[in-house]
Image 1 (spheres, rainbow, N blue to C red):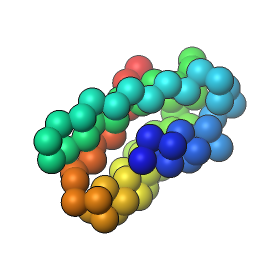
Image 2: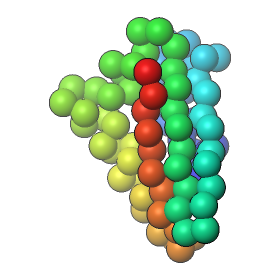
Image 3: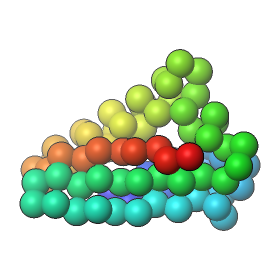
Image 4: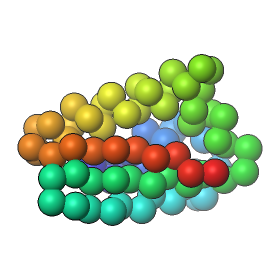
Length: 76
């Protein structure tokens, strides 16, 4: 799942080297903390949060197949 997020986000940003994803696992849920380089935050969030919402939708669908709940937090 972490690889999926990394693949999507690195395709969106100008500095793919600065993409950092931290995974915090629980019993039934997993929280992914996403950090991007300076100036790339807007590209990941998108207009009115549409890009971020789309990424979260993909992650939620992939997590349901594994029987878990996934949450994506975009950190400045």
